[in-house]
Image (cartoon, rainbow over all chains, first blue to last red; front, side):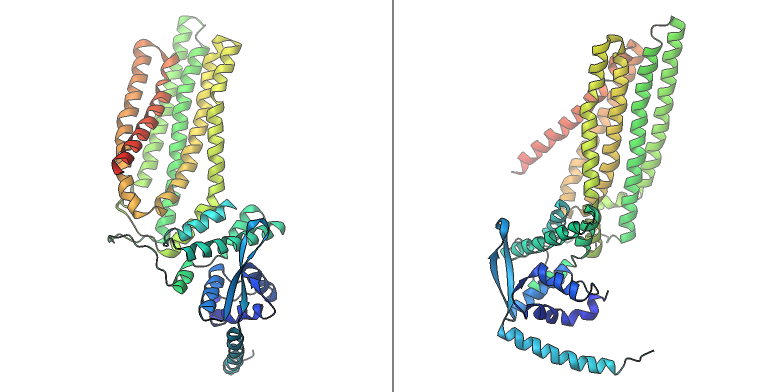
Length: 108
Length: 323
């Protein structure tokens, strides 16, 4: 289990990645992140929804309602063109970050 | 499931009522519900599922910071001591122990009365000397039990004494509040079960009186004994489990409510201080002077009903004044 502090700067990237292949909603995204990381990272509910708020405010994702069974109305999210550009930017940033940090990692 | 709704309600309680927040809360609830149902489907128990869902909720401040919303502060910020986690949990433990000892004490008092009635009836039909000895034994037994109970009341009261300053008001750090809310949410099912059991016992207890008097009028006192003991068990449940719940309620109550409640508590306390000793005096007087131990126990249930009535009337009048 990694701590939420370490990954803080990349929560948005994780969520955008989950939206690359199509629209999704809150719980599905958090479940997929959990499965993809083999439960090494579990995104807290509040982290997820504050990220949605931030991403939508910046225009990286957009939300829309979709009616579910039993009269539930669920909010779905899809990635925007701006969001895709931001995602690519973050990927580049991560490569550099990884290179930098790796300089200081000694294998024991 | 209800526990999760209550938890979420509590988390949003201090936030302003805005449509965007209502919407967010709904979304969070959907997610948590779905997670809960999946965990249950994977074979987790009710408590485990709720525990996991709540522990993975996170920190509400993370959300409010992103939304630029601040919790509603009470207008007059009074300087009150901040409670530490240790203090809060010692308080909960002290209330639990207070509830246990007081509950046992009350139970012993009721058993004492039951013992008196039981022995009195048992020896009633023997010759006068034996009957007198029987009553004597019952009386001695009752007073011994009451003495032990009073000891328990004093002992438990002293343990709670050091938390007197909580009445002056206090502040809870955010993390502690969240952790207390979590504990309270997990405790809720136990509390509910104990309430239901207690109420059922209360409702069922008079059945013994009716049943025994139906069989044979001479047996009625034994019915009363059974009634007293069963009702005492119920009262113990109310006191013990009610106190644990009371500890959480006390720690989590809003500061504003406290001032109003303090006045109420004072009234109810003052009323109780008059009513209960009075009932005891009537009980002992009618017992020793008129030898009516067979019926005079009824003074206690009556006092109980009266005390409930007074406090309700007080509430209603109070509310009228406000509006």
